[in-house]
Length: 272
Image (cartoon, rainbow, N blue to C red):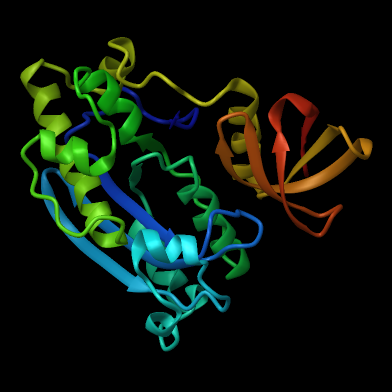
């Protein structure tokens, strides 16, 4: 999905913006129960690298065997690492004023990032967001494989250790830079041009957009939710991420993190 806020200046040059590619590794796949174990961020502006940041993170809970098999990060490796709260200010500063790039960023990364920020007493990130996976489908339509490493290799980008946060963030940024090269060759200059030519297809749905725009004002949104289990309830939530037809949020009624079906949200109000 693509998220460009209502106030985003679509006529700005795509080449002068500040971009931050982000990747996370986690203890598992559960938004409610799992935590981040590694973060990688690569920041570029006007074609030049600004900064890189990476850190192992003590998740204060065990890493699942399945996740260890993917990223190779063991419990012993993060025992003496900082908690997310200890690096939260660094993360917020790095992402300030950027357009977030991520490969399938809405699948999990954004939810985990904003959950950790909330637990650290920081505000969720509602930057403009571009999913480079989606853009790659339009930009390089003939690729047989769409994994991050496969797309990178097809573009002649050297691939190192995959499924580690900094390396994956680097690959994401390098793919985006190749896309910018292609856009320049095609005479594309602005985000409006990208939208008109279909490169920014997959924008988040109207209801999800409305929720995020309200959340940016006060951090909270009041919804009426038609649950298949508990019926119709009114809830105050802190939205954290959109995943397809689902909304990840902190729910004050349940005093816990919850995932809501967008189709079951029947009313949306701001919280003054």
